[in-house]
Amino acid sequence: MDALVEQATVDAYDDERLSGFHAVIEENLAVPFRTTVLGVEVTVEEVELRAGSGIVAICVRGRHRRAIGILDLPLPDPPPEGSEWFEAYRYGCP
Image (cartoon, rainbow, N blue to C red; front, side):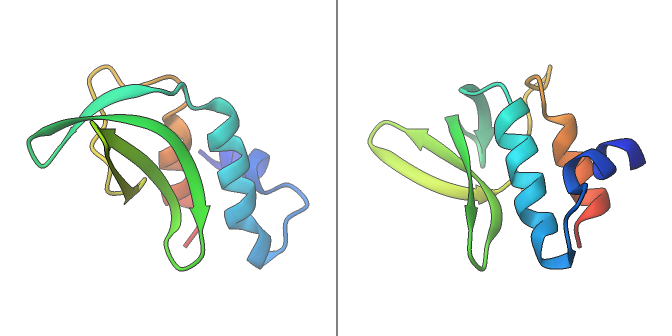
């Protein structure tokens, strides 16, 4: 886990760590993928960095879109490629 955190935050100061994690998640996460949120199947189309919310997954169902923090997002089984970065984010970015 330390190696992933180091890769995401290399040359980043404290306030830049979040941007570093967003960049590696966006680059490595295989989207779109389907998952279930509160009993409803949704498609995760992308991840965004939002002020005040951190890194969020953009979940879509029909014409409805909702941002959910990636640490609150239930992952499908098997998880999508690149989702190991979610745990690295949990571990390395307060």
